[in-house]
Image (cartoon, rainbow over all chains, first blue to last red; front, side, top):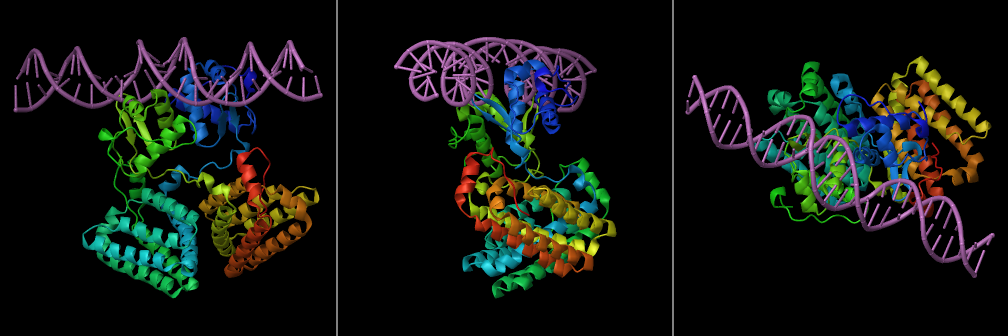
Length: 260
Length: 260
DNA sequence: TTTGTAATATTGTGTGACAACTTTGAAGCT
DNA sequence: AGCTTCAAAGTTGTCACACAATATTACAAA
């Protein structure tokens, strides 16, 4: 592909708004090293005429690249490709959600994290944090008694534990994974089907984690959290049936949840 | 916070361009459930007058939200909060890079992951994958002999191990963390200063991991990988001095690396 | 050589206009 | 009433132009 000073009127991809297409083109140009890290992009006016669109469109496209950390703009100077395009955000492949196997693999990641989090929390927790965890347990029971599926309260429970480990990055990461799973799993049916036994089993697993936190026993906490995740994976597998997943991917508007 | 139809002129945060600030405000409004999933945002004109900025600015802000998948716009209809703003990407807070403590916390996350990865890889590795790991070790030595800092080869080494654990999500996540650390750490000086002993120490740690993989001993692999991370953290701490980090944050153009 | 200043280029922001599209609701018909 | 048709209003997509704020460059002066 030609370097910019000589580049012709760029061919834009088909779908979407002009800003979408220009954005795609720019990403492609940057990734294909037509614009190495540190170099300056042509001026907005210049790009506008090259692409055959207005400056407004160029600005919207550049704005997106900025928000994704690929470029940075300096008023009066220009727009520059960022070194390495590092700090780009993390996301799983879209088609990750499409297979049951992928979902199980995500659970495996979460297992590793939850285990470590529980172990750290057992050592570092303060009394106040332990109290917050216990209160979260109580809220799960209350919510379930009220007829809720308890998923929201369950999220809070795991979040409280992560907070007790003293490392905010764990909190953010686990929450992210939780969301990914929640999006990937349409579990309403499963909860309906096995609500009672499930609730009891989950309760038991939660209790084991809390006990380890109380005793400040990191190994017991790690084991309990890992077991909890393994069981969750098994519960997931019990409703295997890729069909449900695929249906959700095609129609994301359905309600979904994930059993903690 | 008031719902939109009655919301007052929003107070904008301080830093950055107007689009940045409006974008932050909108994210906050959405995340705080002022705009539940599926609801429509006010019209661009309306938001412009409420925020006290031009429609141009609003459009740029909305454009970013679109690119991050938080909202979707339909011409003629409006901008809608996407069902479950899930699938939104993961990123650490910007100011994570600003303190040595934060960096250590990121290393702690990576420690949890690398430990689990090594344990899984010890069990699941194929012969071919083990060979790939060994080859990566060799390449590190070669690169270092050539005078390189060996960071690139080190990345490959850890990547090969992650691949051997059979879960692609671990590969992606660890690579992401590596990039975050690489961005956050300006280590050139440290490598220059302690190159020789460091290389030897790292070599030794790598060897321990590989040995555990050969023996297919998950617990030994986990321990070795965790130790490797702990040592990396110590090496990091040895050049503590938040000054270097802060200097980098102010001037991201400097070269950076991270010692695996 | 160094300094100060003006000219110029570039991004940031505002304003107005029109096109393309969706939604709404009223008019008219059965 | 219930249905269809269609015009009107509202909303996003795009364009054009103007000016402000800032950075870079060129050049003259000391």
